[in-house]
Length: 282
Image 1 (tube, rainbow, N blue to C red):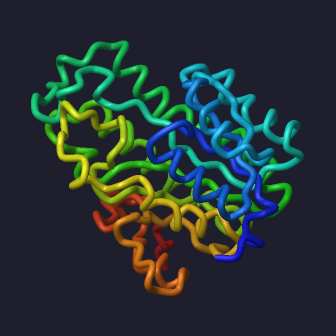
Image 2 (cartoon, rainbow, N blue to C red; image 1 turned 180 degrees about the vertical axis):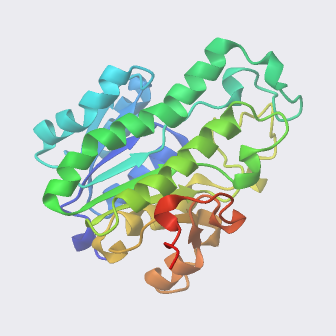
């Protein structure tokens, strides 16, 4: 991919200081993008800034559980960097915040405290909504923009012992499908990106998955996210792309199409009758 596709793009990415977020930051910086990197871990953001020593990386420490901060982040990015073209909602709170060995010792839903449920939903489902709502006026005005939401494997959403993480990502997946329809024909796109399996990040601690080599490595998202943030993805909307499905031996558009399917669960079929979807009787 030519860096000309991203060297004028300004992108917000949340959860930027580690794991999938840091890998995507590295890929986007390599392609010339300017990154407004949001994370609660200020020390790790500073490490990344020191590593790359580039003016194209702007760290911003924030707690996305605060709705007021979420609403202000996009405008702050625009004021500081002079524009905005993409938003990657990657930040997430996982089950390790409840118990590190959750993978081998499942958490029953009745064991989840109200505080843990709220914290996970605030970051995984509400923050992406607030951030996306805040960027949309700017994207619509310029007639171009990218929103990419990082969800999870669909079986994880309904897996035993995966409350509230799975349901929170299911909510984000459903929102993604709704938003993609809302922006049709505007030049703005909304898509979902997932690793394609448990990823080797702090979200899955060693206590739950000790064999790190067997996991999906974060770097697998570098090429897909760069393509999704580029002009090459114009018209690519409402899709769910898996990193494991991306074949680097193929031309990128072909690789994207083969790695993608419709977001959410359209295959489940329409279960109810809606007046706006039902043709009038003759």
